[in-house]
Length: 164
Length: 82
Image (tube, rainbow over all chains, first blue to last red; front, side, top):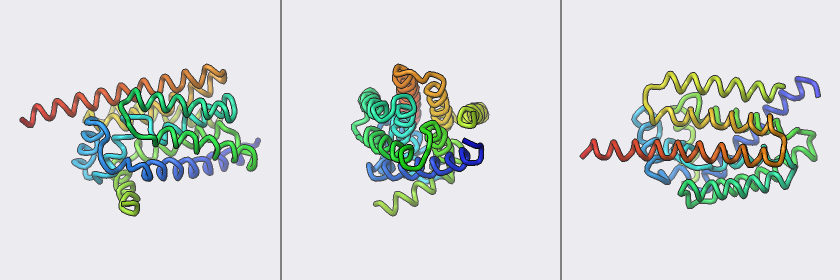
């Protein structure tokens, strides 16, 4: 595969992973409140720095327990290593991880299962490679957690108001 | 090679942001990005069935640590407020 095609695939994988994990997390109401005291504290700290409180809660929840973004990443790793069964095995591990982190929700597990089938469909019908989704998911989490907490939380807050 | 490079560059960038950020609670989202990048690298370097378990164990473990650090800080600030 030439370099240009691979880069285009990674950009498409990034967009797919971004939409997939943000939509799943918002459907599972992650921006509503901090699930554990630590997530709440991170949300409040982001608000103090000029961000949006709901976006901050969602970012705190992503830090504190494996959510749909972690589900998507581990599903991509699973599919890369062992195909569709690897992805579903990763979903089981995410479920165990949620319970270990005192998370009562199912955002991570659901995200991992959906991501497994989406990634598998892209591999089968569009000629993607699973590792491109690993890179895509890492770039997607970078845009939310790693560039500007203030603006990322505002974007998440806007999307949450559409849902609420 | 591009995929591995993206993981490595993102990991390096996240670690620089962690060092530059003064507030501990606001370090944690950057640490989260670093954990994602390392988890991706573990899976890419270890394409073996146990590699999935290793990547997931690393990720869940580091998430639990972040969770514990954030909860401890939250409790401390509650005590300070009283």
